[in-house]
Amino acid sequence: TLPGIAGIALTVGMAVDANVLINERIREELRLGKSPRAAVEQGFGRAFWSIFDSQITTFIAGVVLFQYGTGAIKGFAVTLMIGIITSLFTGVFCSKVFMDWIVRGWRVNRLPIG
Image (cartoon, rainbow, N blue to C red; front, side, top):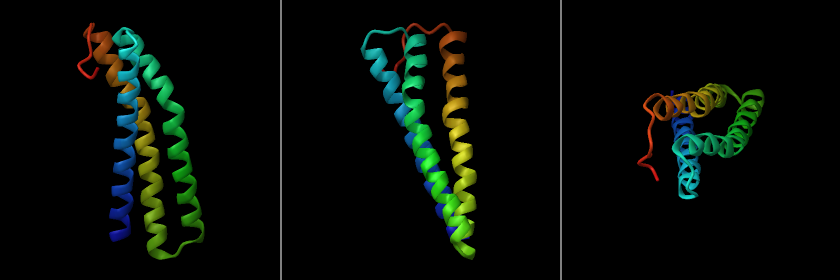
């Protein structure tokens, strides 16, 4: 449905925003002269609460829309809430595991994002 597609589009935008925020925080840490390993740890640590706050706020709005909305609005809310949970998990957990794997597994001395 059209509201479901809108929920997916909003969720994709929020997921991209989370990854951009993480990338910028890692970049800031690299500019301070930290090693890639330390920059990834600090970058994710500094970005977590900003990402968490925005995702939880949007999730609460989805709960309200689901509670008080009708047909199409409820569909939008369900799609939005599922997408928020998924993007929070992938943005914070999966991205961190992937970056740790790159930095630690490959023993990277320099990240090309800085």
